[in-house]
Amino acid sequence: MPKYIAVAGKGGTGKTTFASLIIKYLIQNKMGTVLAVDADPNANLSEVLGMEVKTTISELLEQTKDPKSVPVGMSKEVFIEYKLQQSLVESKKLDLLVMGNPQGAGCYCYPNDLLRKYLERLSNGYDYVVVDNEAGLEHISRKTIPHVDWLFVISDASARGIRSAGRVHELVRSLGSAVKEELLIVTKTKTESLVNLADEITATGIELIGDVPYDESIATFDEEGKALFDLPDNNVAVNAAKEILIKAGI
Ligand SMILES: Nc1ncnc2c1ncn2[C@@H]1O[C@H](COP(=O)(O)OP(=O)(O)OP(=O)(O)O)[C@@H](O)[C@H]1O
Ligand SMILES: [Mg+2]
Image (tube, rainbow, N blue to C red; front, side):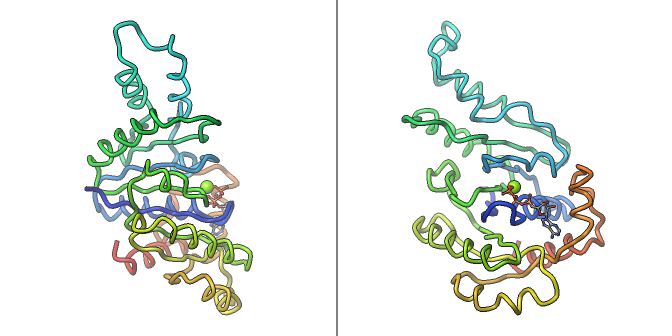
C-alpha cells in the first residue's frame, strides 16, 4: 500500500508550493514512485510541477453523464473506467491526476464510487501518493482518498492563516481515524514570525513541525511561470522542506 501525504489549508498559504517541495524531496532522494493528486478545485499543481494537463477527472465524468455518450455494446461502468484511465498524466519523474471542480448539485454517488475504486487500484502501483487539498478536505471526507498518513496543515505567517489552520484541525477531528498524523507548517516566515505567532499556534491544537521561510526565488520562479521543481538544491525553502520531512519520518 502506498504512503499518503497530503497538504491542506486556507487559500494562498503555500499548499501547492509545499506539495511540490515534498515531491521534489521524494524524487531526489529516490524514495520510490510518486503519484501526485491535485484535489484542489483551483488546480495549479501541474504548473509548479511543469506538467501539462489536458482533462480533469470531473470533466471526464461529466462526459459520461449523458446516457447517449455510452458506446453501443459497452456497459456504463466499463465506459466510466475507460474515461478515468484517460485522466492520468505520465512523466519520467512522476504521474499526476487532477480532480477538477466538484460536481454540481444532485447525487453523483455512482461515478464517485467508481472513482474511489479506480484511485485505490491506481494508487497501489506507487510508493507515495501526494495530495494537494483544499481547506474543506472534500475528497478525504467523501473517501475518494481513503486515508492520509501525514497531513500537513499549511498556514502563512499571519494570525488569520493560523486561525484558519485551527479550523482545518476541527474538521480533521471530525474525520476520525482517516488522518493518522497531523502537523502544522508555517510558510513565508520572517525572522520573528514564529515568536510573534506563538500563542495563536498553540491555540490551534496542532503540533508545529517547522516553517518554510519567505524565499525570494520562489516568488521569482512564480512570476516567471517556472516549475518549482527546478529550484536549486541549496535553496532555503527546499532545505526547510527537507528538514521538515525528515523530522516527520518521511
Ligand atoms: N516560502 C515561500 N516564499 C515566498 N513565496 C512563497 C512561499 N511559499 C509560497 N509562496 C508564494 O505564495 C503564493 C501562494 O502559494 P501557493 O500557490 O503555493 O499557495 P496555495 O495555498 O496552493 O494557494 P491556492 O489556495 O491558490 O491554491 C504564490 O505566489 C507562491 O509563490
Ligand atoms: Mg494551490
